[in-house]
Length: 71
Image (cartoon, rainbow, N blue to C red):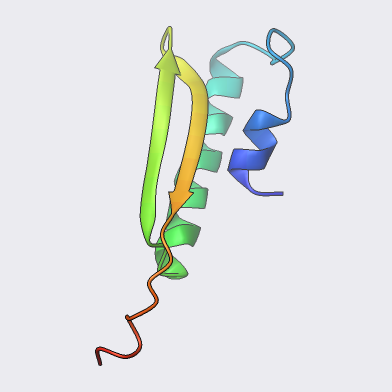
């Protein structure tokens, strides 16, 4: 399960709090970003922070149809 689905599947208020959980979520976010760069992700990511923690993550992918034809 990728990070975006993992974060959005939790109900509001049920997320465990604390510095350990924040650090693990940031580590998960960094590994997801690294994975997307390795798979040549085209698009953008919107990360909302709430009171010092990650509130919501949205991922927008763009499909490049002419990328293969231009080379």
